[in-house]
Length: 274
Image (cartoon, rainbow, N blue to C red):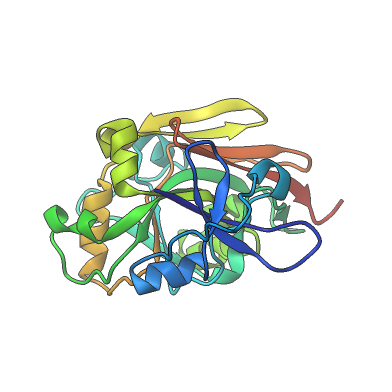
């Protein structure tokens, strides 16, 4: 199953729906986050008109998760880009506020005066049921599905001091996700194994860096298990699993996260100084 949130033009109201095989969206009552919290989605309304995302437009799947948990340096090549040592014993992680969230097609805004900003394409796990102190073997049983992420970093500031991590990750528009959430079973039907899913950072239509999930230092299941021993994760929480490569952004750019043939998330880039 694929679920998403659409924003019809001309209003603030959003519509949650289930994506049909033909790509149209059948509306369901309630919001996507509420469906995750309840553990089930209502059946699509047979009387409701199916919507075409090409006509209506995607919104962020939801705007207020309890937690956005990010992972740093989970691919060796990206660690080398930053001149950083690869974490060997345990993952490197950080939290982001929900004020950073934007959806597909919304502007990534480069703040004035902070120097180089990069975008990182990532696979994210969407938690489906409470996850606390679980083993790697149990971890994915707590996952509803996956989605695409663009995680932005004020890299020039980060290189001044790695302890500025919270600051550099938490500017508004620094976390885009969507356009859909694909259930884990459908994801596995599509790729066979999560390890085989290719994550690509795409810059102005050209692949900047691409790698399969199998190249991660810590697998998604290991990441979720490890952090579940630090804190409980709840339905709707997002665990973004790290990037194969970050690309510098400039005013007028377009950047995408491509998850194999599963989905592509794209955002334009604008400078606050324009």
